[in-house]
Amino acid sequence: MSDHVKLGYIGLGNQGAPMAKRLVSWPGGLIVFDVRAEAMAPLVELGATAADDVAGVAAADVISVTVLNDEQVREVIGRLAEHAKPGTVIAIHSTIEPDTAPELADQLRPKGIHIVDAPVSGGAGAADKGELAVMVGADDEAYAAVKPVFKQWASLVVRAGGPGAGTRMKLARNMLTFIGFAAACEAQVLAEAAGIDLQKLGQVVRHSDAQSGGPGAIMYRDDTKPLPPDHFLHDPFVHTRGLGEKDLNLALSLGKRTGVELPLAEVALKNLAAGLGVPHTEE
Image 1 (cartoon, rainbow, N blue to C red):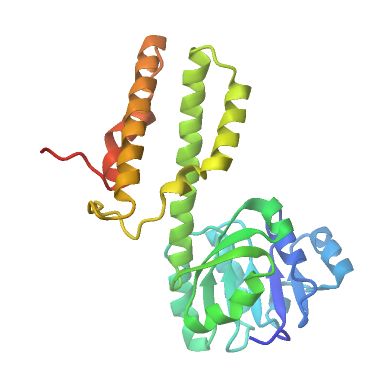
Image 2: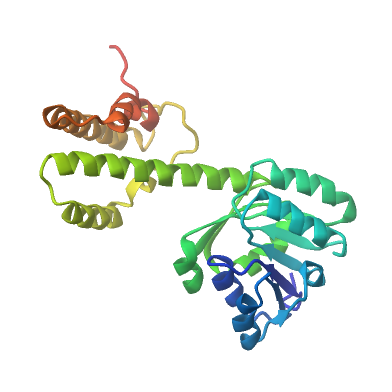
């Protein structure tokens, strides 16, 4: 894709604003729109062009959309579709329903408009530094168009598949995050009941996760089938299974002694071995 295509950005909130900021120096220029004029002003000062409405952004070749929900996404893309030219690529960065992007892609394909779902992970801080991860669902032509644009604000650009795949990947990723948060809350309840300083526990967790990589440290498999004995992960995961089951049993025992229910720990103990791909087998 030529550097001289024009970019557009709609939705300049906490996530969209720092992403758009990293695009203002794009050679082909940047058109922005937000319902709040004050959200556009800092980008205009840096060289972006403010549009009067959503339709004004349709002059761009690659348009990013970061709005709140499915309803807003459909409304914005509907307005863009009325004015966009064939070949336009519209990238949705909002976390939406998994069927929304494929439906919109099918609707707009006859017009020659490409829909890309490209939710991001990392937050506004990572956007400021250009270190977001973006999970892209796109056809070949659209992916080639958006990849160099996304690299302005993302240090990891992953193509998940066709339209809709980016959203499905983001939902799995966020599920892990929030299950992890729930598990952290459960761990704090146990620690508090056992007389542990929660601030100090938090320091240890953040430090050790930074060293070990947290849950991502086990996510190197191509599928979730049981691992054959000669797989390079089999023996390390058997070791991990042993450590995990020992420590989970110890935590559950402490929970009983302190009168704390630990439902997530019970589920983890039940599912860890099979989840790792090294289920216990009767010999």
